[in-house]
Length: 78
Image (cartoon, rainbow, N blue to C red):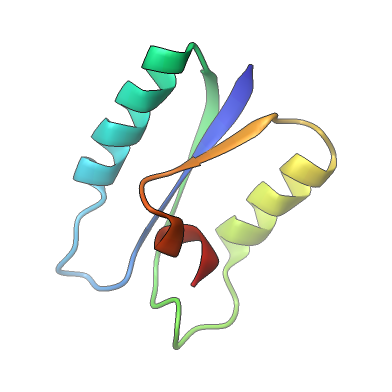
């Protein structure tokens, strides 16, 4: 099953490596084929425009991927 990983950090002090490592392990355990990893460094509260997030949504709508893997739900919805 094709999937992407979406990573978001809110500040420059945060690093996405922990998110990435855990998402990769999750994908491997379930047999997902990772097509790409998208990363954004921005606040989910302050910045309305999230270009990478929009790319992922478009890929899902176009059925280019079957799953989006995120480290925590707040990384996706905020």
